[in-house]
Length: 164
Image (cartoon, rainbow, N blue to C red; front, top):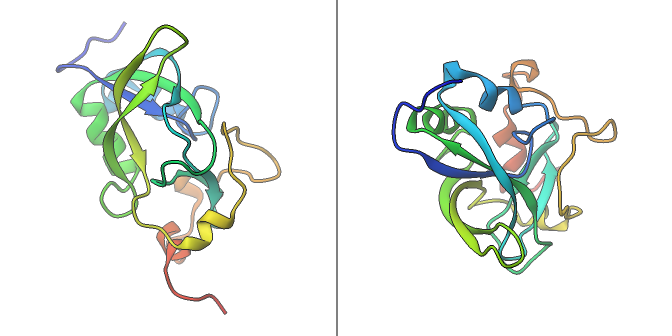
């Protein structure tokens, strides 16, 4: 069993980082830092979770009150893992990482967790179907980062410009 290298934080994941999803191996790799599954959880507010870009990336949009209560998982992680994930999630360029309370069950209360969210996004994302839970599918297959073309970075699909 791997040992934590620093104080632990809680991290809520609701997309490709969840167990059984394409990017969970990042959390499972001790080379990225320490991560241990803690429990399942749900957002305390309705939030839009959408699949967008040509790479079918799940995005949790910071638009409280819109969409569904989103289910995901909470992991205990160290700072090294958070730094690895900040790099993966293009923190500050695409996502921001912020603290949100997550519901851990009826009668169990809430727990503050880090969560990656899109703060700035084109309004067109709000017209996509909202999900309450993400599962990779053949309908919208997630494209792993190493298989994406540098000619078309994901953030190009998140531009605010009108598409022709």
